Image (cartoon, rainbow, N blue to C red; front, side, top):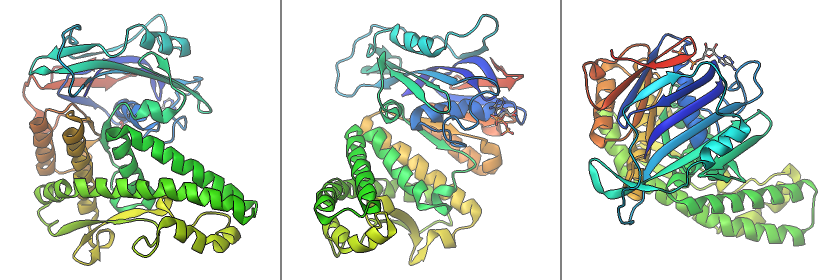
Length: 416
Ligand SMILES: Nc1ncnc2c1ncn2[C@@H]1O[C@H](COP(=O)(O)OP(=O)(O)OP(=O)(O)O)[C@@H](O)[C@H]1O
């Protein structure tokens, strides 16, 4: 999939900007604090419902404004559908700061902009003569307390429905937390990877989350066994397959992650991944485990076993990765995991997710930057990359690279 238009309104220092990116690599340059990362945050927000720096609303809304609004239009492959040509591909890349009369992006405007074109039009694109592409549109308005979202002209009831539609894989300065941070980061990696490739996983996840909330409320209220029995069954019925999906997903990306890690950091050999289910699954079904800990959970007021306590780890032989890795290696391992996630997405959906690489030059040395950029080019995926300068690997004119410059709250195409 590739983004053909991104509109930001009242997002961090941007008043109103529109970006028309190219289908290949989009490099966004500018001085420190210019607003480069904010562009990537907007994409991440539309794909995950949160920025990678903050939860939605926390700091994203431009000072003094009521709400942040983001509108994104993208094209994605529709596997197994006959090709038709009913739309015109976006003309070349370009990015314009929008001055003067205000916004096409108020809450109602977000809705009407999205609704203004029928969803699901299909088209053929140069280079993929038989694979149909459809155009999709999503808009999100967030006030910090509440939000409104539209997807393909329809109001969405839950943020996850909107976010599961656009697949973005982001590598940014905080990404090493995937390896060295809390288990929540690693569960989120698996869950969002799955939301984007298996849309039905979202229903399973919601069913589990609801059962967990109910069980925890009953535990806090010291409810009787009859009520807990019913929610234990529901939790186990959703939790068992949830864990299996996650484990299968991890097993599916493992060979690619191992290959990419060996390519990016030759010292990272002999690596393997292990899924930790969140209860002693080899000894008990989840239902038995829940019953076994019920009294203890009643005392504590929360559920102590289940997939919400799951984790996964990378190990070299018997040494857990978190302890064996240097900071740089942790970063490269996280990058390998994210790129493996992108490759898996492409293999399953027949389409690449959008790749976001924030501040690449400060995260990776020249050698590794070159390797990652060569990987991006070889995939043909659309990528958004920020930096204070043009990295050596992207210098010189190329039809696959579009350059943009951020300055004074505006974003303009640049020819450097
Ligand atoms: N809520 C907000 N309202 C207005 N301006 C904000 C808000 N949040 C952040 N900013 C400003 O937006 C800019 C942040 O931009 P961003 O982090 O995207 O810059 P950057 O170009 O990626 O910088 P760097 O190269 O230092 O990482 C800063 O100038 C900051 O002061």
